[in-house]
Amino acid sequence: MSLPIVLAHGIVPFDALYRPLLQAGLRKFLRPPDKCDYFSGIASHLKNHGYTVFAPRVPFAADVHKRAQVLKHRVEVILECTGADQVHVIAHSMGGLDARHMIVDLNMADCVATLTTIGTPHCGTSFADVGLAKADWLIGFTGTFGLNIEGFRDLGTKATAAFNERALNAEARNPVRYTTYAAHQCYARIFTPMKLSWKIIAEREGANDGLVPLTSAAWTDKLGSKAVRQEAFPVSADHLNELAWWEPCELRAPRQARKSFKTKVRDAYLKMVRDAERPTSA
View 1 (cartoon, rainbow, N blue to C red):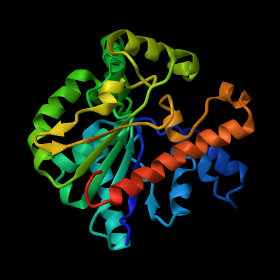
View 2: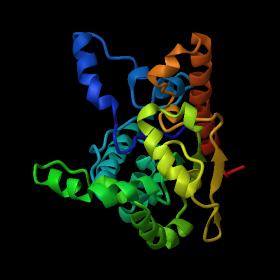
View 3: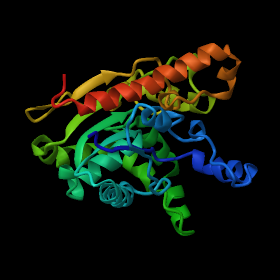
View 4: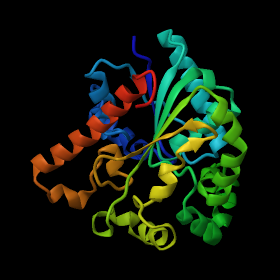
């Protein structure tokens, strides 16, 4: 029997911003299609192939420890409901850091069979460094109003380097199998709001997906003597494309081209799950 699949979202689950409106528009008689979810159409694609899939929520932009705590609770509930002993986690962006912190700091290594990350800033991103240098005060300011956006600090290169060093021995010794997927996109095809961040990262770290450097998403090929499987995302993609999302200007592309792209991305997630099920990495 296949283990449950847990899809872990990034720092900003943007679908939460419009989903209440979409739900209201459907008058609560219908659930919005999952193509409108953060992981666009991916859960249903996996379910159609016989997998049990969950996409739990963790706090918007909160610090990684808080998000890891909530993710742990969600995973424990999933294990209880399904009767499974472990899950496979597939995580996008900061979701990968949430999962790593959960595994290392919250003693969940025995509950996670595999962790596959897509576009996760394992080594941070210079865009976060630049943003923190210019607007770190904003994080503290919003905190006075009860809004926790400390998670942005956890995406900086210093914070991730400190965690990588601290977690190395635990990750090298635990039974979790790690796989990373890294993507990049050319400037002309980057989602417009990410063009500035693309430039900042490109100047400092080279190829990127608009928010995360290719090298940071790839992370490392070794944790001690344990291999980390490094994969290239199967299509050129920015940070949103990795979720099977298109930006508005790309909607001018022929419908068949859009459908083909989305299918390739969703099939990439299916491959991730099938690879995770194998006893050992190929």
